[in-house]
Image (cartoon, rainbow, N blue to C red; front, top):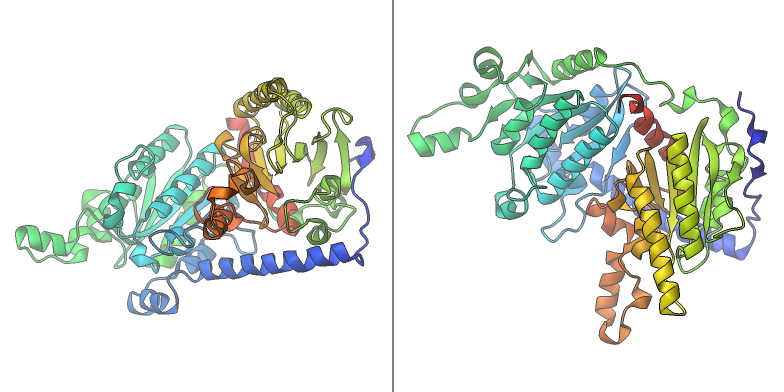
Amino acid sequence: MRNFRRLSIVVGSRVNDSTPTYRANVRENATTAEQLERATAASRVGGGPKAIERHTRQSGKLFVRDRLRLLLDPTSPFLELSPLAGIDLPYGNVPSGGVVAGIGKISGRLCVVMANDATVKGGSVFPITLKKQLRAQDIAMRNRLPLVTLVDSGGAFLPLQAEIFPDREHGGRVFYNQAIMSSMRIPVIAVVCGSCTAGAAYIPTMSQEAIMVKGLGSLYLGGPPLVKAATGEDISVEELGGADLHCRVSGCTDHYAENEEDALETTKNIISTIGHEVTGWDEEEIDSEYSPLWDPTEMRGLVPPSNDHRFPMLDIIGRLVDKSRFQPFKEKFGRELIAGSAWLYGRTVGLLANDGPLTEQAAYKGAHFIQICENKKLPMIFLQNTGHEEKFSDAAEAARTIAARSHMMRRVATATVPKITIVIGDGIGSANFAMCGQTARPNFLYLWPNARIGLCDLQSQNTDVISDKDDARRGAAFSAFHSSSRVYDDGVILPETTRKILHLSLTAALQNQSHC
């Protein structure tokens, strides 16, 4: 039993839910939550009812989310990553980026799972598909979690091959990462439950173990039509690259499955031989003694829909941490940054939260506290609201602030403990870097629906040369939905679900930390 009183301060307070401001915030944030719910629901239906019908009825395959349902432990949470990927891109909509990715339990072990959705453009790999795959692999490597890939892909979308093939962070990086994961002793498993054409053929062959489904799985660089065009030979899919060929003759795959259910059961058996079962992933395993004193759903009324207003940071922290208790650090110094220790589902964490630009004092305070967390091996949680870029009184003040922020950036970049960032308001300018933005490689980064991301905010730009149309377009480009559709983050989350998401992310990040 934790002695919560050892953390001296109860932060936050009861809210008056009858005030006009509170009610207005609830209404506005409910509208944004509905927008998020609609976008998430749209991503879950893949290529739409007709495409799913062709995939399941005509091809005899399982829909991607049914595959995940059979693979993952029942009733256990699945932390889906970047579900809004692929919305409103220059080359069209690619729901969920054409691949479902996330973290869940398989046979009691935490794993990163990514599964092609062949109902989206026939499983073709678009630039956004590749980006999401690489991010899933990065999360597996950073957190040392086994990677399971359910492959059903027609390979690269050739009209966009210039954005998929040539660069170091393009298609070949997937195979490079698989080799690096194997060298790090991170298990890499592939299930061939559909087409593995062209570059996709290397995913199972670069995996440590591969399962292939009879009659559905196929693995080759070029299919029967290409063979016919090149040699004039007629050959079937099974003869060219089916499960019998690769399990009995070529040896490219290691396990023969009669159907998809058999393949997924084999995968679970393989995972059961790896590592140890995770505890604490399911919320029912966590004692209710850790609940905050204040209701997290009240954050909908506390968070202003416009980031032009100040955020009640201590009220927000009080609805995220155990028993709403918090031990502040340098409480009276650099007050633009709140820093201190708290518990999250029984784990001690360092917490940094800014409400506005980082001043010189705030940045030095942050650098100092990050060093303490690193020395104590405390995982860090960043709550980021940078506000608008401030105006400096003179060049000397600007220079001192830049130097202080640089010091904090160095501490963030070199910290080896797990780091999780939530952008709850604005993530603008250099303060975004110092508060562990994506360039600082946090283990996970999420946005609230009202969040905005950018190098500089709209108010600081030269409005004389920006038309109303440009202003609307630039405003949309700052939004959380724009960011998440391009996989600049790991997902848009609601304020009231943040505590649970932090728990799942922290559990994943700490699961195999002792082996790093």
